[in-house]
Image (cartoon, rainbow over all chains, first blue to last red; front, top):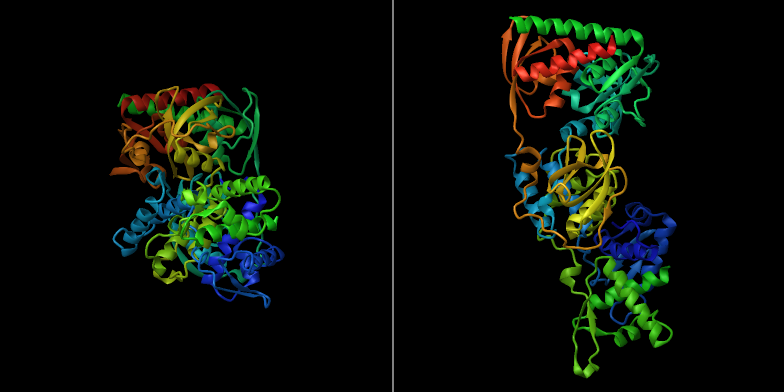
Length: 309
Length: 313
């Protein structure tokens, strides 16, 4: 909600925040300060100059701040009025409350920390009118994400059990995670898969039994990269357009026209069309289309047997 | 630019340091930068007060005293200005920092960051070793998240276009009650003025920006409104019996509360609530699953398969 704040106000807010921050971190470098406050070094020097002016005698008869920063390191004394940080604003309280709610579920319920989180939520709630109206849940265990982040940072590999949705199978793999990505609410890790000897993308919520593996990323240099070929397919939509748009990641649904799309997996296309029956129809490729009709027919025959039994 | 911020900082210091109310004249005398005619000084001061208030700084007006010609005085109470969360330990700071980190790159990232700067200004070192290694992450959201939060806080009605099941844009008028993330998506719940009932919306299905009405306090959030029961509760569930092929259908098996070995297949029992999405999930598993019970569900699947044959043959 601070987005449209005019520049002098953003500036004032930063100046007010700088005094307590420097007070608590005496001797901090201007470079680090600039980074913390997300401004350029020259802007930070500018800020400090302004603050220094504020502290000059005659400006306010009430206060004499003693700020020194000419060596590239900043100290501040005699600023008791502004020394304590400002109270948290609405957005800040809300961001912390959501965050605490999120980590609460990752902390063992019998641990002492659980009590501490609850207490912090209580203290923040007392300052916000809408505290009980906020809930956040994580899609994957945050300890799993931490494990992957550590593997990326230390260039280590992980042994995982991975559930492939297309084959509906679990496979053991050794992967070297390279990057975490989020796309429409789903988290992926882009990794080199030692088992498939190629780069693959894995969903975090389909990983199980993740443990560190002793494989060096250096050993991976010179590996071939197999790239899968994308399959072009065309479908039409007759019902449940919102769901179809989300399921097939369609940009523009249109009105019953042919929609051209790509996928790496024939199995995924088949399964998605099955799941979308009566709402989406596969037009091309003819081969997959025929396969779908055949499988559906066989399955109907099986249902006939079950019903007759 | 810096002249103005300088003046605002000095004004804050003056109003914060004083133990009594300061009159305008005292302020004009002691703070550099109020220049020009009396009228223009007044105008500057009025603007400055508004500016500080917009930063969330509460300025108290009071101290009417006949000696001061009935002139109003101003001050900022330290207890409203300063951060006070009671006594905080290094572990508390570490937990709060971790909570803020969850926003990395997401909607409230800026607010989370400034909260951290404030917490680091208290002078207590974060005791990172006292908490487990976690990497919490908020679900991706549109910037509309803050609009809805703001509306809830001031109880203002919101209006927006929402994509219906058939992907048509329908204008909704909602009294928002609560916000939650679940399964990677952000949702808000509120009272739908036109439908006269509670409804839940997904942020990424909002077609355009959310418009917040001007009038605050235009409704009340029912006492004891519980977000979680609203999300989870009050859905009727039915039990399905399915035959699933061995080593297949993990997505169905993980929700089963009873599994019986039946040779080449396993028979599983599981609850479901939304029939349409459950049928989708069953069909996703193609010929690795057969619906045994209930018969209505079986019929539903059979109809969908017939449709599939009709449209793909």
